[in-house]
Picture: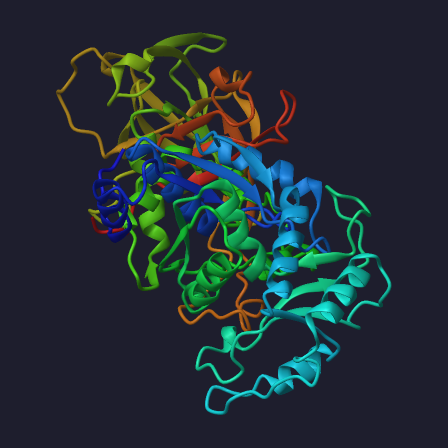
Length: 546
């Protein structure tokens, strides 16, 4: 694991040394209304890694205070993603676990004269709030008595009012320069069945009330969140102070991480799915964790990427190539190497005996010999990549096969093209070649130098396969939530039909390989023994500069 330091670790270390905290407890609090994406991975990884480094622990807490878009499907998906990344929460809680305690704290605020029931509509509340340059004005219902507020708040709970008819607001300062402190709404009425509490409640706490209280109830010491919540911290602290919680959590903000050509917003990812721009949340082009997993990314590569970016108080943007770099670094010694031909061109080796097949030794990974060896088939008929052949050698830089030019076949022999065959449209149908039996791989033959080395698959044992090839889903450097649909890449997913070597006949979904000279691939979830499907995870060459 990459060793990194950041300002949050410094804060945690100082808090432990000063005795401010005895044990570090963090939390990851997703709202269960969507699938997690790689932006969430930053929060997950840093929360768990920081707690682990200081011998603490991390809770998973579902922020399920808004049942309108929440579903048990997302709850289950979130837990799968966290465990796939390699983490196990100490406890799993739901914000709804604390609805009764949160209600009691709201009653306390009313009794202290710090909260009131307001009859203003949402539009009126917004109008009364003022602007960044002009103070707001008090609601005409702000000075209701404690007794009346208690009665109305209980009536809200009992379902005696319509949605939007009343809300509970904090009584703070309508002239505060921080808009979040201008009597924020604490509770609203919603007649929606909750996936945990069903129809028990019809009032639900707002995030700015629920979140600090939940942190306090769980004993969270360091509540890590993104920079957008920095202006909410005074309200966070106000709630903790005036609700008289026994434990006082500390909110710390860090900058968001953006990745080029990538939209990381639950709302806009949902738009891609609902408008059928992609095939679901697990589409391999998506930045969701389920999508990255299906694409072939490893938990280790995502962790290394996230930790390498560090944490700061500013938002940052990194190149997608950096994420791919860490994937290649993780896979290069793990992935067994195989041969696959995505766009086949048949080669008939005319001087090789008809009906004969021989099996040659091949290493599974020449950089990691612990992965062992396998046998690969060779015969008179083989497939090579169509792009590895040109009828005439174009220039001295061409290092593949062409007419009367000799190349080496990986782990096999030298071959030379002798004849090219075309159809009526002038397209090459197949070629003839000869081989030199003295040049068998491993024989030590070095009498002449071939014009490069190419891979192949023997025809009679070749297994048909489908290859999904991906480009960036979104093109352009200036991508915004407003223009990302019009910048979708029409060529982001293409399909090719080819062959893989016989050793992959029994491959299982999520098994990863490096296909020689083609890139890293993963066997897709929909793949079967009779219909092999491989997703290209990443190419072999990187544009990222370390």
